Image (cartoon, rainbow over all chains, first blue to last red; front, side, top):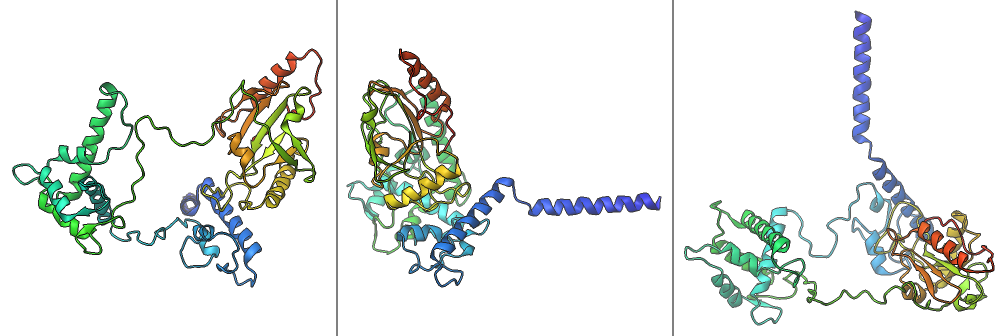
Length: 281
Length: 122
């Protein structure tokens, strides 16, 4: 009996140890990423840490500033192993004005910024308090609440424009709209009556107006991505050559002998050429 | 023929990857030569003749080769195969089939050197 008990105890301890190890053990993918990140730091340190103090300063780093910044994840102005530690997420360092702290606050600001944009009646890129009040008035129901349908309709729409109406498209739009309404209500319905009181929205103007000049300017509003007009193609640059087309000629140096170049067209008439475009990474 | 172009996932690019080879984005053609050499040696690709796109990336762009892509130019100078954009469109089997078809066209057999049958994914 005692032996069994002892065995049981050992088994328990072993199981516990395993569980602990598993807890601290990362997924294989995470482990690989972490190892990769260490390799990145090793490369940077080897190449640029001239005084070998474990840090790469901007003076030691010869490449573009933007690249330095993207490596400097903890935003301390130098590159070090700390920037490449596991779990080193691209932190709140991005952009000077990123909101820290209260996530709900941030969500509200985001929502308000979106809500406010359509209030720019004269389309001058700025929103005066007058424009805002007028906009809100247009969205207000008789009992002083915000008409949610009108509100969501007034917001910049995501997704395709000018595509077929009705059917699936209509259903999707409806669902999107409902989701937006629920989201907004959850953010701004302070007294939990299922409605957003206009007063609740109005106070937000002052909050978004950071420099308190009575107008919401470009700096205070979210950067808008230029919306694509219906029918306008995405600027993809040159299209890839297609089968049947004449192969665009080029003349490039050989890897084996950089002093010698070759023209693609020189193979014409003699042999077909398979082209493999790619890179090490 | 391997056409070595702009890195797909240089560590200091907009789309870094921390798995696989750790490479800084070349800023000169010379640097790209260096990375290409390493690539070819490390991956055992030295049997494939390789050319290097200049750092202005003009050829890569004209062919929309980034991040990777396969083509076959026929002896008539026209494209007999134009693969899709990598990684999903990068299909060595399709290229192989296109090569076989192209070679079958000719009355006189063409030597296969320089036209790789098996293409490893870069």
